[in-house]
Length: 381
Image 1 (cartoon, rainbow, N blue to C red):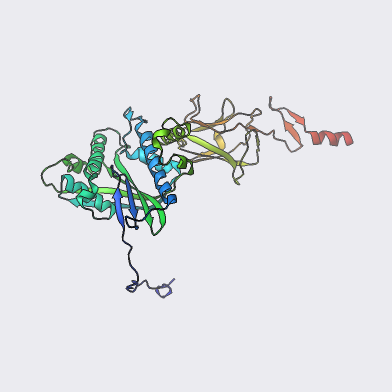
Image 2: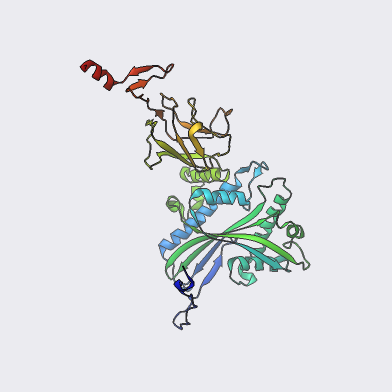
């Protein structure tokens, strides 16, 4: 295409009829949930929107509990809510967050204490507040800073990011929307600033912070609707506790297999015989995928030869493998492992293969026996 083939982009003409709606903002006590509305204070939010925002509160409570009850294998201590690895695992693994924007930002300031914390929150959210409106700011930023200090003293290079999440619940002209802002600071890139500690300093000090900001659309799961507005009564509810355990597994990046299907997308029911002519896909999450990973029937034949591994899918074909009895298919981190890190929900076997003369190969010593169709032909002759 030439330059003349493009339409020149021009700024729109000013129109006095285009008026930005007035918005009202309020945060919860910890600053992790922000509510935005175009309604006046004497107008009521529709019940459907209130229920959606209540679901966000329930999910945040469950996420907080799951993270703080999960032991970090690196430190052997419970995860902090401000640990990026823990937050990231839930965001990527839950399927409830749709990534819509990311940016790397630089924040330069000589402020300290409350002024530093307030300014940083304003810069990240993009709204100017009075200090009294975000009294949580110093506590929130100080908590991130404390996590950063803890991580900066760790020898782990893969667990060096301190983060926080803010859910933004908007009710704009009658339309409810929920998004999530996740901001993290890499301790290795901000070592000097962390040592200065502007959250805790009393004297002015110039600092430059390198931050990363991600924005997600949050899709509330329908299964927590029943808990909205009733958190105290669900602490011992089996379904609510199941959600907590699910989130904890995400934090730990526990390998899990969800399904087995053909490469064409057809689900393979438990008890099926796998065909030597078909390619299959095992779908899951946090699956091992390095050079030592093995795919085998539990207590049976090895399927690794024709398998390719990624963290979310394993593609394989059975080839010449023999597996006459049904068994789950397991993923192993190495050949020496006796127990799989994850198994298929069902059990499967491999169909017997036929040679060119229609003879079915037996499972013992490579012998062959006539198939039913070839026997009939010999009788007719």
